[in-house]
Image 1 (cartoon, helix red, strand yellow):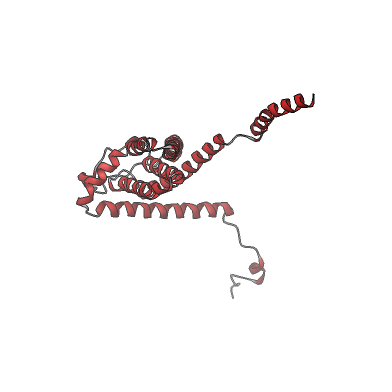
Image 2 (cartoon, one colour):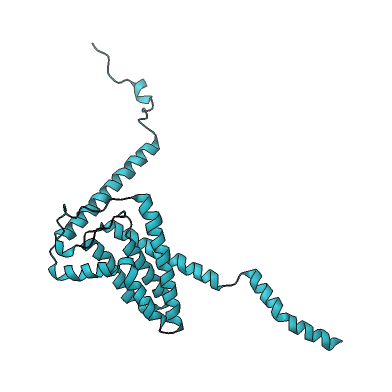
Amino acid sequence: MTDPTTTDEDSLRPLPKDGKPSDGSARLLGAVMGDLRAVDGALYAAVAATPTPTLDRTLRHLSHAADHSKISFAIAAALALGGKRPRKAAFAGVGAIAVASASANLLGKRLVRRARPDREAARVTVDRHVPMPTSASFPSGHTASAVAFATAVGVVLPPAAVPLGALASAVGYSRIHTGVHYPGDVAAGAVLGIASAAAALAAAAAAATPSARTQALLAAARSWPRIGIGASVRR
């Protein structure tokens, strides 16, 4: 009669550890990131496979016009001629573009280094094509700058928020439609744009508000004439 393969003593022993908990977390994170990349690629392929001949030329021109934030700078120039509040909004928008562009191109693209989509393999129609950039794909600099400008200007000049937000959304989608970015790149660019606008607005507010020490010195300086007058009267 053979011995049983499992005894009571064996059942009380702790299960052997196959690996550290961090290894399981890393595998889970890797699996989630793999799934997200698969969804990202599927969305890109779906846009590429959807025939939209009416939109192709319009979105191609829009994507090209957004190079180097030309559209945003043109709007800023027009706002600068419209009075004190629009001028303030224009300066805020340009500052937000500077922060977003530096963050996307000098930090994001260099850190992630995601390859551009294979536009030919996805069979993106030639009617949509714009020049394929040589920089990394993640995040979308066009989207980051457009969203940063729209957000900053919209905060200072609320009536402009909706039209500029719609324009920024169209610019972001045009980068997917023309095949030069994955949807995930555009989503990340939008988040970066909002953060850049917040940073630019906070910096502008801090520069416009004197520090407590400066305020104390100004208050003391304003009181000097009154002190002098009071002293002369008492004499």
